Length: 127
Ligand SMILES: [Cu+2]
Image 1 (cartoon, rainbow, N blue to C red):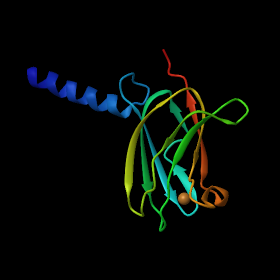
Image 2: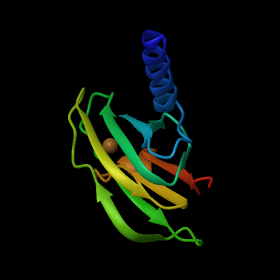
Image 3: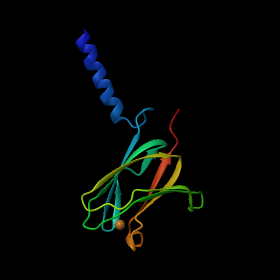
Image 4: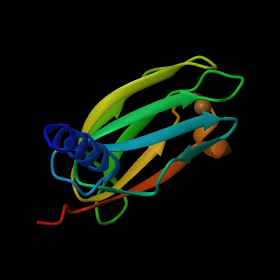
């Protein structure tokens, strides 16, 4: 009986980790950088703590800057930079996201203009 309960607890924990809507679990967002685009693991995340993983899947260095956009699409508030990553490199950062829209850009010369920009939608957490 005790063994069954332990197993149930493990299964419940696993289910929690896989469900982004669960209160305690941070949202995970993967961002793959390559020439010349970002590929996001999802386009919409829930507000709150988010674990963002940048991976350079290309052949050149890239960086990632995340900034919140106001209603008119202008950058507002804090800017979060991941710094430059080399091909094959992975960098994690924990961000606190508010509901709204965020812009993701590579700030290396010419990269954003060539297509390294993406938009992330952040929706309010359900109560
Ligand atoms: Cu780039």
